[in-house]
Image 1 (cartoon, rainbow, N blue to C red):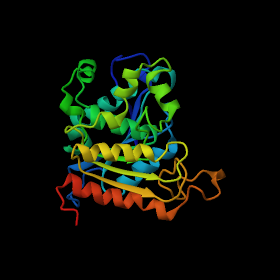
Image 2 (spheres, rainbow, N blue to C red):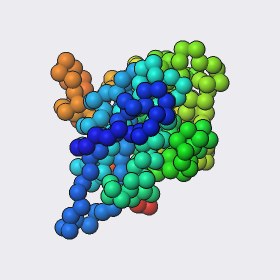
Image 3 (cartoon, rainbow, N blue to C red):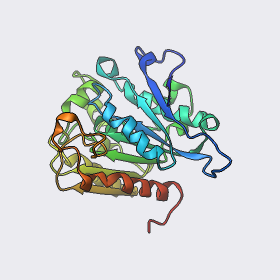
Image 4 (cartoon, rainbow, N blue to C red):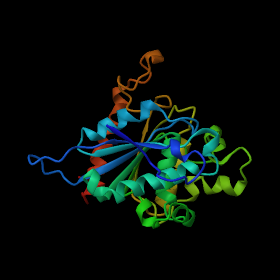
Length: 281
């Protein structure tokens, strides 16, 4: 694993703290997988911090499946206000594409994976990659920001319905206007430009209600964007891989649930079909 600074110049106050962890398979004459597909991970943390439980363990799961993986440690806390993490997400996708040869990846097969507030960020770049302010801020064409596929785990979606208020407070500021809230409510931002999505959530999630994923799926349906949705009957928020590796010591088994851990394999199969024009058999 190699960690780099995402920015080589000051885009906004605090951007020098934004880093990208890179997990890259080295080319081999014995393997024919190059160029590989890329997976960019956005851990959760309510836009207040970046969760380790939803970072490297997620990257390692997709790395084991042959993907070259990246974990974005985006801006959080007070400096995140007014959409700075969205700029980070766009910059990270563009960086991976611009350095496709260095990372041995196919620039047309870049997926993003996010959890909770990181799920909001993944959905945000999936729905809003074309916004002019992103290209104006970063100085590159918007097409570089668009993911080819999106995986969302128990995502924050709406600032209007069943919202996770702390995430929106950190992302937009407590002084946010109704217009700003609506612009970051992803169920209102889906369009024909949105990338296909794989979504999973648990019915019992009390921190980020399952209604968030349902609203997003309904909007994807309305705009005829292909998606796959799994709602597990029980399970608390923040499960990550839902296995022993990502279960906190204090959890008493609440985060180690094999029934839910199946989402990883399902998402890999979905990605293979989505990125390689599969027929979903």
